[in-house]
Length: 71
Image 1 (cartoon, one colour):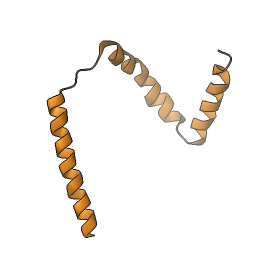
Image 2: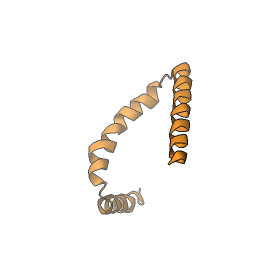
Image 3: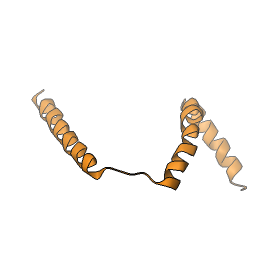
């Protein structure tokens, strides 16, 4: 526990210096209970839809790459 205080101070200063303190306090800390609940109960993934989405993304990436190479 003796290391926690200095680490918290260092994190605070780094987040303030990089203008990320508001993001941390307004978004990330509010997600902790939600992510904890998701971890405790588990998350179901539709692998068939995920694989379909993977194929769509691969096609889009290929299209963007070919368009970029023409430029």
